[in-house]
Length: 528
Image (cartoon, rainbow, N blue to C red; front, top):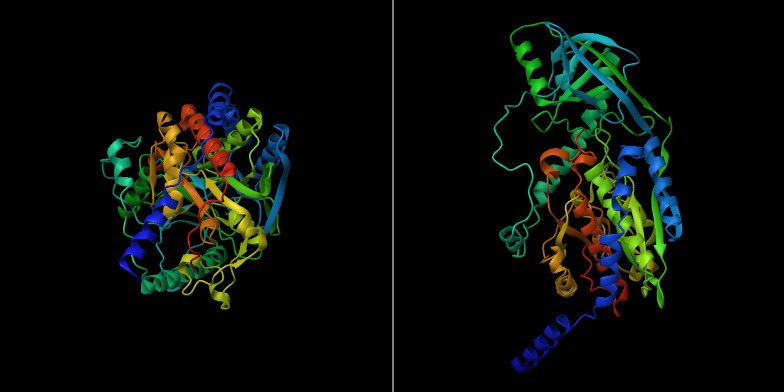
């Protein structure tokens, strides 16, 4: 190829990349007017957190949340509001209360909560505390016949150090500018991936062995150390949600300050006795399907093409799942309400999906994508089928379905309740250029940043990994990673109303622009 021809082609590509996007400023103005003056976003997040409460997948509260969101979307006039089943996911579970009290060598109430999918105590039980940190089956076997009636503390103590970071943060201009710089991806490390996969399988095997062993030995309960300090209980799952698998014994997570006290007493040779009363139960004995909530604003002219927005509806059970992720659900529902209330007529259909089982590995969104757009083949080796895709040695490419090409873009909201400051383009440089033009009219409400970087761990990954443009927003962190993420403090008091109103306006604006674009959003080459 000649140098002049190469230069001509590069100029042509640059022209395509920077082609002017049509922006309907009148429509964006109507979206702002509705979103800022008639917002219902706080009504939604309040209902989800304070009337329905925590939403562990397949719990009675999650069932209520699925049905309430379906009904609410339908009442707002959205079409085809429905619940879509996937799975089977596993058993339902809920807890009502947890009481942990030290009775010797002194009286003291300890702060702890049960792990999801672990049994209750069936009334108050009293036993002696004992430290047992087991890293292998052999570590457990040494105590065979010696654990009956014990309450096992199964983590080492952790020194509490003063924090050198603020509890509540927003992006400043320097941090936003840094985010826009190119981050060189780390090369794939096959040896580390193999080692991580082996660790994953080994830990799963140890967990199942431990669950069975401790129950057979008559252990009363286990207690783990919370992963955060300052009186915060950060609690997720234990036991097993799968029917037929051993669930073990009642399992608790305790705040660091109380856990360390117990271990210091044990180190001094004190006999520490605890009384526990954990009211927790499985609400089903068999593996049930779970459900995603879905609804649509039909398109006009390109109605068989789709722009999707979504957030995960499920939460952990320690708090009420406000920042993680009733905030995201409320923002996405409000964006749909705004679009319907304004009477705008998008070319493409705009579809909302509220996912279940995100906390167990993006299961709801992955199932939806697999059903409608592209299936990820199951590895031939049965040992590897439950591995996260990132740990599979040779992940298989997806098998595309006819509707795969009909999805223009998917937008996700799941980094707490902080206002939107920009968007991650997931290394899709052509999409990044489109976003830069789209956010220009949103700069006055704080949206200024397009970063080409990838971000992970949210439901947009289910779309991105099969070649559908999937995006997560850049959001202010607030106190998401200092106080509320997966903790008992994740409640309505940590929600900032103005942030949610702004976010809903931004989502509605970008979803509308994507739905009105002449061409679908640019796509990256499909990677295995």
